[in-house]
Length: 390
Ligand SMILES: NC(=O)c1ccc[n+]([C@@H]2O[C@H](COP(=O)([O-])OP(=O)(O)OC[C@H]3O[C@@H](n4cnc5c(N)ncnc54)[C@H](O)[C@@H]3O)[C@@H](O)[C@H]2O)c1
Ligand SMILES: [Zn+2]
Ligand SMILES: [Zn+2]
Image (cartoon, rainbow, N blue to C red; front, side, top):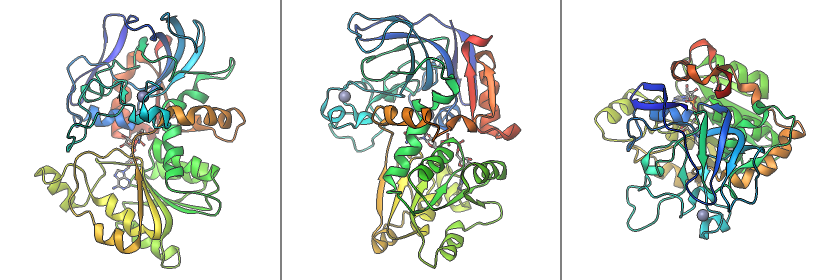
C-alpha cells in the first residue's frame, strides 16, 4: 500500500510499504478514506520529536471503512464507517475507568515523554507519533491497523460526509477539552493564543459553551481574519502588537480575561531571549506564551494549555501565577470521552468543524501538503488527504 513516511526533518515521502495485518484479536483493519495533517505532525516534521525511525508512517487524524475485524471485536463490523481517536486506550485500566483515556497505562510499550519518570507508567500509545508513544503506524496511509477496536473507533451514520466528522479524531475534542479545562461558561471572556486548527476549534467550542468575548492572538492575519468571521473573535496580530497581554488587560477593565487557552505549545514563536535560550538548549519550550497567558488572565482565572509542551521553560513566572491565584489545566485530549457528545453537536449543526479545511489533496500529494501547512502558504488552515482519490 501507499503511506506517508518520515525520513528526517522536513523529509516525508509517500512510498510503497507492506500492508498492515491484524495482530491482536481486538484489532481492526481500516481502509482510510480521509486523513488530516495536524499541528502535532509539524513537530515531527521539524525533527523536534525524539525516537522517530526512518520509514515510520505518520498520521493520527483519520477515518474510513472497516475492512476486517479480529475475533474479539464486538463494537464494530466489517463495512462500518468509523472515525478513530488518536489515543489508543484499553478501556479497562485505572485511568480508562476514570475516562482519562490519554493516560491509559496499557497501550504504550514505549518510554513516554516524561523526564522525571521514576517508575511511573507512560500514558496512552498514539498513532503515528514516534516510539516514545508506542511506535504505532499512523493513518496517513491507504490502510491502517487499529488496535483496541472496541474502545476507540466511533461509528458514524451513513450519508454524513467524511469532512464533517473527521475532526472528531483529534482537534475538535482537543478544542472542547481546552475550553472545558478553561472553565468557559455563559458570559466568559477568553483569550486564545494561536489561530491554527486547534485555536479555531477552541474558539468554536468556547462559543458553544457560551463565551461572550474571545480575543485571538496569532502572527498570521489570514488565520485571524477567518476566525473573526467564523466565530466573531477579536483578532490581535502579533506583528502589530508585541504585548497582547497588555492590550487584553486594557480591554477588560484592567483585570484580564477569565481564562486563556494556549493553542500553540512548545514551538511558539518567542522573544529574542526565548529563541536564544532554546538555541542554547537552556530551555526546551519557548516561555513567551506561558508568560503572556499568566499576564492576560485575571486573578482567580485559568490558564488552559492545549498546545503540546515538552521538557522545561525558562522564566516561568510562578510568582505571578501564585499572586493572581491562577489555575492551570493541560494535557493530551481524552478523545474517546468527548467523541459521542461532539458527534451529536456536529449532527445537529451546532458545530461545523469542516469550515476550517482549506486544502483537499490526494495522499500522493501529502509531502506538498506538509510543506504548505508548515510554511502557511496559500492561506493554509487545514489539509485533508483522501487516500482513495488517486
Ligand atoms: N492537547 C492535545 O491533545 C493536542 C491535540 C492536537 C494538537 N495539539 C497541539 O496544539 C498545537 C497547535 O496545533 P495546530 O494544529 O493548531 O497547529 P498550527 O501550528 O497550525 O497552529 C499554531 C498557530 O500558532 C501560531 N503561533 C506561533 N507562535 C505564536 C505566538 N508566539 N503567539 C501567537 N501565535 C503563535 C502559529 O502562527 C499558528 O497559526 C500544537 O502544539 C499541537 O501539537 C495538542
Ligand atoms: Zn493531531
Ligand atoms: Zn486503559
